Image (cartoon, rainbow, N blue to C red; front, side):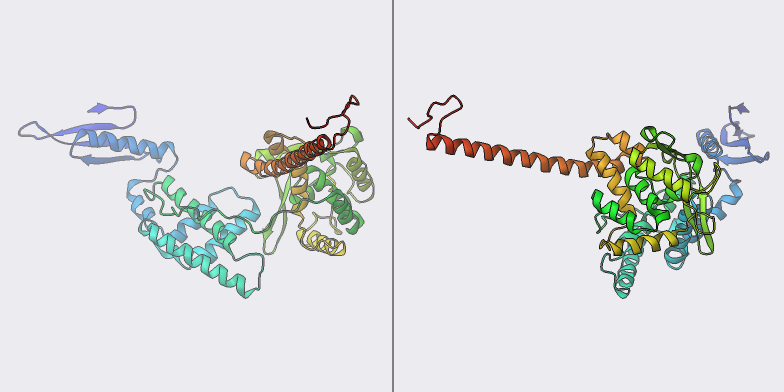
Amino acid sequence: MAHRTFGSVETRRSKTTNKMVGARARYRGPDGKRYSQTFGDRLSAQMWLVEERKLIDRGEWRPPDRRDVVRRLTVGEWAAEYVESRSLAPSTYRNYTRMVRVYVEPTIGRRYLHDVTITDVAGWHAQVKADLRKRAKALGRTNGDGAGEASQVYKFLSGVFRAAVTAGLIDTSPARIVGAGRYRRHRTPVVLSTEEIEALATALPEKYRALADVMAWTGLRIGEVRALRRRDVDVRDADDAAITVAQNVSQGGSGIGAVVGRPKTEAGTRTIAIPPEVAETLAEHLRKFAQPGRDGLVFPSRTGTVLSEGTWRYAWIMAREKVGLPDVKTHDLRHTSLTMAARAGATTAELMHRGGHTEARIAMIYQHASAERDRMITHRMIELRRSDELAARRARKLGEPGDDGSSREQS
């Protein structure tokens, strides 16, 4: 018997010839029971122990006699388990469970995980796109063809298969359609002018005007603003005022109201400086409309709870219609703020902080907008220079006097 750090390998020999005829590997599992398996050679037994130890280290170990049952999971069963095993925001959980119910379970969800091929996934994806395109047409949508939702559904299923690979249920993911998870939005976010922001804020009910100003100057998400409490707002000194994001509001789903929790990522927890004018507006709002006490909501609903998504959406739609900006969305306030920060010279790291982003590529979207503006400035400079050169040439041709009073006629 040769003992190892994990488990042991026993060489088995013939009773008549004393030659090695096999090897048996043994180990004690996390459940306290002993498990063994016989192999034709010692190396295979050792490799089996290595793989069993890996499963234990990753927290994916199951008794060997139960693994065949696990491998017979359908895509739908595994997708549901995948969703339940993750720590998700209520809105994300609601979205994922809907995808499983609507797009996975009725079709590809009935297949066993290890039976699904790349061709199966490609066919499923094509059908999802066709169904969503048909639905968009039936609803008379003019701003989309369902491609955005199709890409999100594909990304979800791709994550389900990747998790199955990690869990050792399948060897490779069949979700390998190049570009299926990418989508370029048809709508380009709007960068609002100062006058437009002021008009929208003025058109809102008085108790929501400060909300629009906060989003436009800090770049906070609407869920982050709705979750603000008095302790998160420091306007004691208008020249050094700031807002701290410590919570976020998301919708829990049908029958579930607003759910308040921590931001999705560590980057979401941040403190943003606000200009004196906004600090003064916010201070006035706190005096008139916020709930009392450190834990009082800054923008409470009429009943004293967190401002609902539907209530805010209705107020916003009425305001944008009133000022003649029917296509402007709430998110455009955040987009405007981050774009202006980029134009003001904010670095990628600074934009990531202001926006609460975890990925630099998201912050660089706003820097791209700044780069476009910079390119416009460059072209204007070139035009001015060419204009000056043209004027100088005309002056030389006409023989106009130079700066020293002498004539500059052609020789």
